[in-house]
Amino acid sequence: MILRATYRPTGDTSAETRVLDIEQPTYDEAWDYAREQTAGGEQLIHVQRIED
Image 1 (tube, one colour):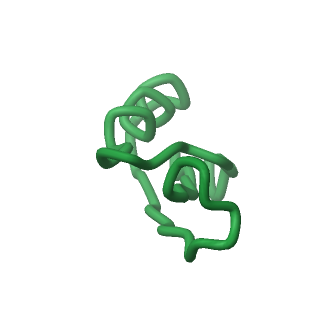
Image 2 (cartoon, helix red, strand yellow):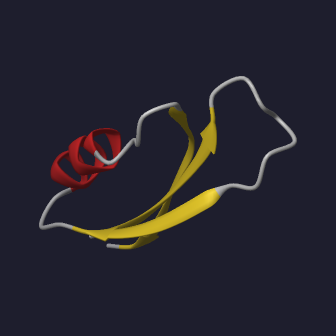
């Protein structure tokens, strides 16, 4: 399972986003990992399934 997570600084809609491709055995594990990778002052704004 591969998810693509997109992050942006909290409160700054014009800021550049950060994209992270996450590979984990299951969707739930990938989703949990995506939430854990949110850096200080960032929010997770989009998650897309890339591959099953």
